Image 1 (cartoon, rainbow, N blue to C red):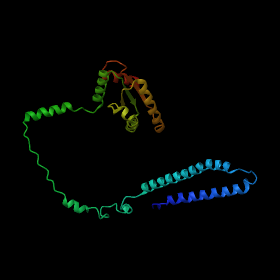
Image 2 (image 1 turned 90 degrees about the vertical axis):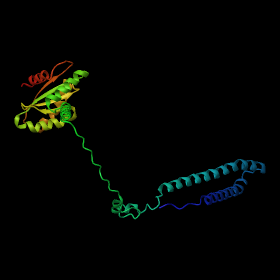
Image 3 (image 1 turned 45 degrees about the horizontal axis):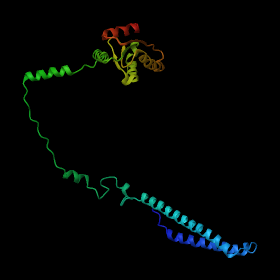
Image 4 (image 1 turned 120 degrees about the vertical axis):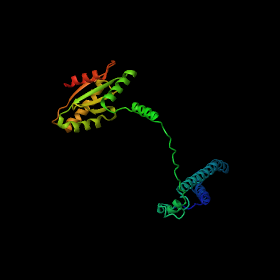
Length: 260
């Protein structure tokens, strides 16, 4: 609810009257109590009054300015707190059918034009052209398996001269499926995870050298040991380390390091 407007002009006048009354009381007390004990002539009293009067005027002006500034602050707060027209019951009109200013949903649906999709023209393609297109599509398709991904990542690493590391993990057969899922989830986007035909798990770490890969795998292994306490996992690592070599060599080095 907005506050009522205050009559600040009346307050200024009242303050001025009070100030004059207080000044009159001070003058009377001054003449009754101070002058009898300390005689002063009219010239001395006039000099004091001339010096005090501007101070009193300044005090009244400061008080009026403070009142006006306070009024502006209150007016600004009232303007900020104002609600837009017809906004008092807006929370009660959330559904389209509750607000009479909105069109009914069914009426709006009935007024929409029905759009009929245009039929596509069939284009005849010769068998030769279809065969060429099919072969081209097959060439562009990349098989998502360990060999293709490893070969592609290793080739990219050698072309742009960055490191890549392969980690081979040997897990007991009864825990292979469970631990593979845990490993793939823990490495996340840092590596590619695959289950190989011999039951081992291969982790491809692009942009990681062998030391960095061992740190990641060490953290992962500590988590696995906390969940699978009786399971022992062996790891083997092989890194490109600036060499130009094939995927078979890296895979063989990792298998040997793993004890396979």
